[in-house]
Length: 82
Image (cartoon, rainbow, N blue to C red; front, side, top):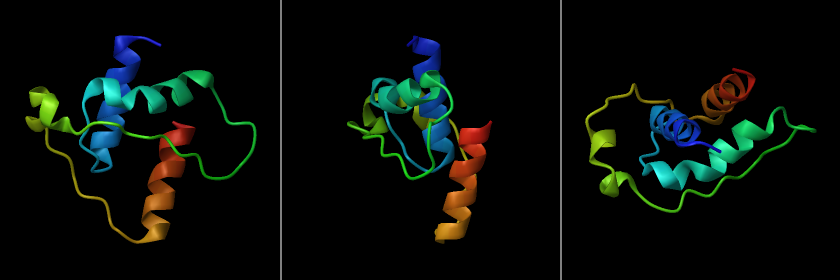
């Protein structure tokens, strides 16, 4: 996986309200680079470090996401289909 893929994964997580450093988004970047999932169901990617180590992340702003499950599921589904 590339630095650009990890930066894109970090931005995707930030858009969902998860503030992490770029290297911490490696799990999601790896999942995205793997291609379409083989089956339906939840996938867990562990974020190992906060964004406090990545000052550039703090300069960006993102719209909040509703905290109800249908909104979260829709956002995650849209992210995986995009």
